[in-house]
Image (cartoon, rainbow, N blue to C red; front, side, top):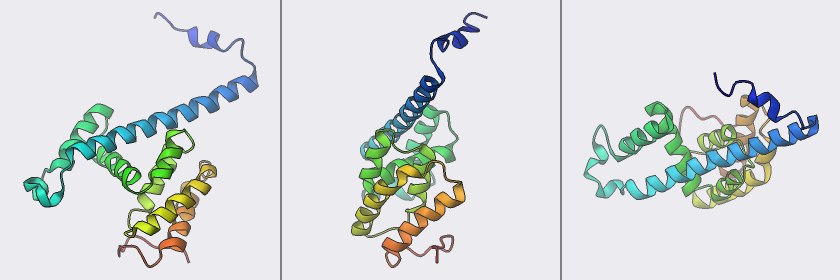
Length: 178
């Protein structure tokens, strides 16, 4: 087929160190592209998701959030459930973690780290706690990419627990570190 074998020749003149540097650049670009996707989803939510108190469809089986999720699912070739997850990530970054969002936008955090951060912080209810957690995460999370999932969750939970132990919603599925 046309084009087969071309990729191997692209890197012939690049030494090993150059390949690693290019790989790092590509990883940062991938993270920045994922952050752009989250920002676009956040803007779509801002434009299309009405205040639940003003939306007669808020209690419908398929509300505005589901409609947006369907569009995102189609655009990103995801399942509806995965698209809902992307909406929640975008919403949390937009509303509560602007510093983390900015770092993500620069390619400083991997999508898996951001997904873990937004999920593990979801029960915070106090805006002052959100601000502290956002700053702490920005200062610490850049080194969390290589961590195993369990350790990553533990690091995030430790920050949340230290900064917000009395300011989270009750949730039987969430257990802070002791």
